[in-house]
Length: 278
Ligand code: PEP
Image (cartoon, rainbow, N blue to C red):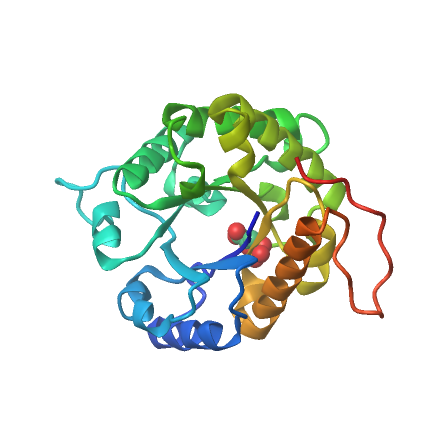
């Protein structure tokens, strides 16, 4: 499986800064068949930003779309217009959209349907609040996957990505422990297999997001059902982001060679062997 390293840059950058950031991403991210990069810059920079991306493994996406492709919806962004512009991804259901803009599983599910209908790929965010962190996080993730994706069980797996982002781990100092991320991503994989069937359910990429830093990447990516990472603040530094893409490509290569952890730079501690992927 090709890994996916994504970044949602929220409203951290202005228009010109966003264009510079996209150009730097295009310069720094390694072009590889083993790992893709999906960049979600501020919406208005998508139009001109598209021309700054030439590497075949880098795609752009919108941080939100409307649940309809056309009609009397003042101020909304049509997924059809994104398609027309050649923007392949829509990020849907991010914690901040739920927290500040009242999105619910019901509205997010409608947005997923509209985006898929318009031919976009969807990056769907799920994850529990702090009160479920120590008990019931897996069940919460499974229930969210059911609510968000069961209505699109015929969607091609390459058009779906699930970002597991525990809400308590977003915008803080430390990422979730890899063991916690592993348990929830395993639960998500089980639910995807139930909804999409064994073959398609195993092809959908599951990525972890929430305060990921460069030094977290290798430990997270060696977990069996973590097929990439979703990064916020740490990706403002494009060289950092590019190094994470390199780490992901190394892990994908190790998977192809029969599983196990990717080789790390000599200064890093050795890790336990990884189970083969499903
Ligand atoms: C996010 O908001 O999706 C995110 C991962 O942000 P950060 O890495 O800054 O926690």
